[in-house]
Image (cartoon, rainbow, N blue to C red; front, side, top):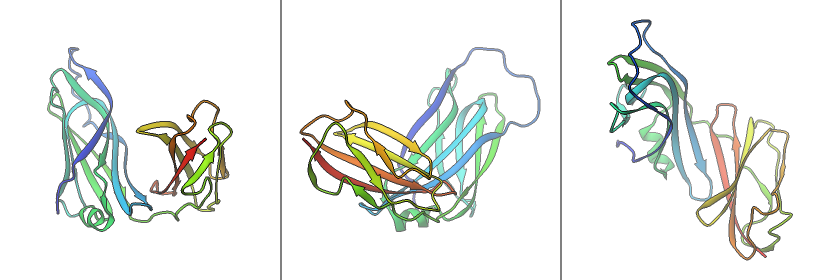
Length: 222
């Protein structure tokens, strides 16, 4: 078992300096989620942990169904800039190792507030993934794909909650779209893609539990 290297996106930072809140009910975390994302091409997966808080936080701890700590995030300058919410994404790793490290079940999230209280929450992690999406166009390795007028198409999935589409050139996410389950195509607006450039499309099927299965397609524009 190991603690994963983390990629952290802080939803917001709160500058401190106001009067502390009066005593009241124990604070709770909100919108807690733990999601599994699997990329078919690389056979790798990540865990995403999210939560929000009305109180300013200095530290977040996540413990698995077996009680073992799997994640810890500390605000390095919490006395001046504290966490108000967070999205933590583990390093991509092989699926077997990730699923062993993060077993399915209910995870306990606890966060220390800047005034010494503990905010708590819980999140359910499922290992159930939606079916892989089937991308019709563009196809892998395609060349001379028009930079303007590209329409991405894929197979419908009756069990999908939504689809997540990302269009990339180089290291940049040129376009990200979240579409309802009845959509099976996306027309890329003019000006998003540069001509004569290696490009990538990522189509993700998001299941009703929030987990996502992704397929990446590489192509070159003309």
